[in-house]
Image: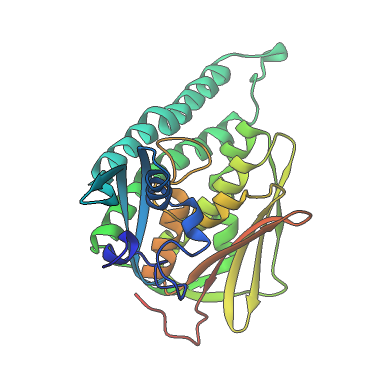
Length: 314
């Protein structure tokens, strides 16, 4: 007697009185879409992500679903079939990561080394900033690989955060420095908005840097050439907040699905950045990740973390 989201314990199924199929998130659910198509007499096949658990601890199922209308015993029914493709999605993402993202970074490193070996007029390097960009690109390469290792451990429940006092302004600046090559290659500017005074939180600096780094990368990728991204730090109600702004406005579907595993506005094989932000910040750092997006204000993502006076979860 249960609907699919209720049977699979979808976290959104209990967020509305009428249950599965009636929330604003259900409008973009592949399972709901397939069932509605079958009820109208059409066979359908869709991809679906079911997020299970609470806001602080959740897991994601990547599913392929099929629906087919059929009649039996004088009644009309829907045959609904589900296959778990989570493992295939992970493999697809890793292929994308190593063949595309890391491949592009390595190609950039090779190009900069080539420019450094070529002297311009007067015996000067044809790329005076190449050493700095090269350092940023290699750091980014290592960070990409380590980030995937951390996410795998986080999903398996084996990640052990090292919670210490962290000054957010310094961490934000260090994270921004790691993305110098990304900003240069995409021709996007970064403005920093420092806090009026030091803001200290209790967190794991390595994991937090990955959360802030993903916020920045998402903002840069959503921006057009010549646009500006802003990075800021502030204290709010005794908690430390890092926020990232970009001028783009998210579509309604993206706003509802942004934290789903494997969902991305950038195409197949992407979509772990926002998901990992939520897993790391909320499951391991005792923080919370949120966003707002609208016409005239752009998009702001932020992570809020326990201050030194709070007890951080782990």
